Length: 226
Image 1: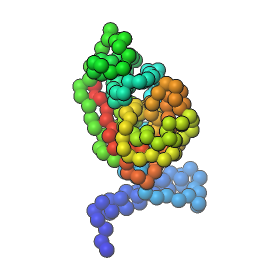
Image 2: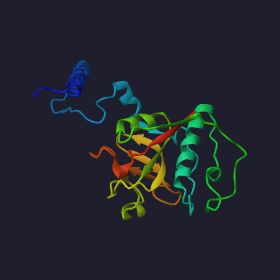
Image 3: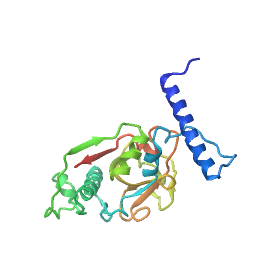
Image 4: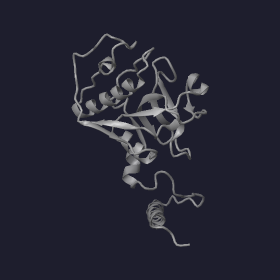
């Protein structure tokens, strides 16, 4: 059966990558006959792009404010959006400003009403990461903190305390979070609450077969532009 154009492209790309890697290995005389190469989620990236996204922690780069406790405020999307906005503003201006979630909330909620609006920031708009495109998400979070939605309904999420989360969950998105960490080995890092998980963070497994990502994390990702 004839290969499709995409199949031909992937095969050619793979052979090209294999040729480059073999050339580099030969020049360094470290070729390992047991090494196995195959197409994976990084196959459509250039080697330069791959190196850029291997490990990004926006906390270490000063683009993330200390964890905020959502408490009984049900507007998790606000905390997610604010975290991403704080991040892109820091990258744009060099100043990390803690913004008020209440400014984006509505009257009658149980969010903290102590408004900290003495400082404001502006953004130009926002971009949606293509749905179920984990590569696009990798590239987005390599540039700035982003907003994601995940399914946290399972008991394993409720009692999570540390380590790479590999628990059972679906794709019924019920919680907004900020994605601020990305690494090949450590997985996704998302903000959920100050007194929960790893000091407010969860490290989620990457590389699962499902196109939606673990707990649907790749379904509704977005980020502000400035």
